[in-house]
Image (cartoon, rainbow, N blue to C red; front, top):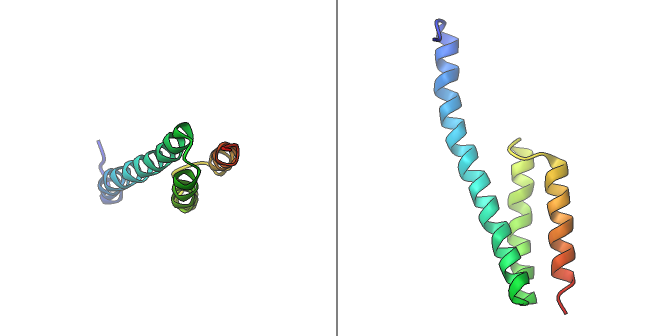
Length: 87
């Protein structure tokens, strides 16, 4: 168990940050699923709009240290490729 005041504070902060980070990742996953669903439905306009909404949120995830930059770059690439493949 934590003995020092600083260690106790870190425990409090970690639990608060964990909640924030989980919410951020959940929001990103939801936005990515919206893009994938629009692509599956073949709706290019909806897919493009969903991708435009997902990209900044994914970039914020990288900036906040929630996701790795290469993971997000790979997802950007694959999502963009799938949206552009819609006839």
